[in-house]
Amino acid sequence: MERSGRLGALLALVVVLASCASQSLDKAGGRQPRQPVVLTLADPQTDSLELDGFAREVTRLSAGSMRIDVLKNWRLGESANEPGLIGDVRAGKAELGVVGSRAWDLVGVDSFRALGAPLLIDSYALEDRVLGSSMIAPMLDGLRPLGLAGIGVLPGPFRKPLGVARPLLSPADYAGLRIGIGQSQVAAATLRALGATPVPLVAAGSIAGLDGIEQQISSIQGNQYDKVGRYLTANISLWPRPLVVFANGRAWAALTPAQRHILVHAASGDTAAETTLVRDNEQTDTAILCRRDLLFVTASSTDLAALRRAVQPVYSQLERDPQTARFIRQIGVMSTGIPPEPTPSCANSARLAAGASPLDGVWQFTDTEGELAGAPGNAADIVPENWGTWTFVFDRGRFAITQEDRQACTWGYGTYTVHEDKFSWLFTDGGGIAPDGAENKPGEFFIYRWSLYRGMLTLYPVPGAVSPNNFLVRPWALISATPSSRFLSRRCLPPAGALPS
Image (cartoon, rainbow, N blue to C red; front, side, top):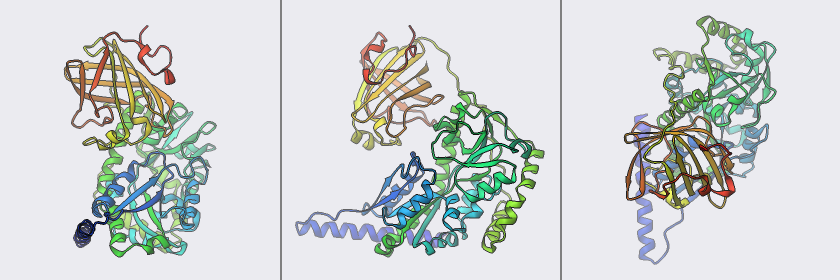
């Protein structure tokens, strides 16, 4: 790993020096600097936060000579969107692609199946250790028969059981139920071994009519699956959802060796940061779900032992392949000495009490896409829902906001408190015209520090808090000391009753 890191740094330095030399010659000769190589990456997800770090690393390691253009929502709404995406990259419709490791067995690639073996990888520390191990290279080699090149595997969140009418704790709880799953032969075999009927679940699709699903906490929160599912088994991690980044074979061959190494190094060098991001998002979304009163339940040690016994037929099937059997054994050895993953819980979820504050009134600011993208330290998604004209009404412990630009117009409302220099918001709901699905969700909790000077309110981040930075781009101007909904956008008004009468 150290030799690989030094080689990556050396190659990155070579690219930097070559880029600088080329630009110097161009300037001397009166020519324009070369344009960066832009690679399109097909992504089936709506929210591609896990790919942001990879894309930034590619830009950094190449000194700006390479750029990744992430094309989100690829085949959105299709039941077989990931196999379809793989086919599209094979056909050259995008140079790069990303799908969950679970999807590859659907197109005849079995090398990743150990990553989805039930109840095997059950902590972020173990997932990180596995993805940094020597077994990843032969897994990626399994893509070659399809004319694809494996680039790397990024860490993903853990899929947990969400029950509708009852908790899913022991095998008996699954018997006869219809459980929604991400498309995967291993997942389907696991649910059948537990006595359930697996039902392929469309990404971000409705779960009405199902008895439960397997899904990560952040997806449950973002898609508001807790409106149907009521019981989350918090201490059961069925399997992780790692992301496999890969390339069209012809596009890969057209890159220089240095460019190919930059892509590989950007993926392998970003796993620790991505693990931290995934874990932080899970903690944030756990708190949101707790405030929305989702029930977090815990399986007993007896339940866990019964689940492991019930899924043994799945292991018998997986281990018929010698390579998969070897990977499963290696993962078992790697798990030695790793402590159990902390169980998500509602111990620290915040609830706010209403009351008047020194910030009651109507505030407004307008920012642009460019200002949002260029703001120092800004980690916000650069999507239409996160810039434009913002109007905030704060009235005796309740707030309503609207955001409007040409493409989006969103609303949100909830409760807030002001305590000394801390300003906290808890969303009751959000909606409006949101082309990227980035409207505020019930239970979201934001906290900021604030200062007020001559009618201008400035917000600052709170160390350790996970709150969006898009409200920090500009100071807010006080446009009325009297709270009133008449200042909110007429195009996307919050529901009646959002503010006090």
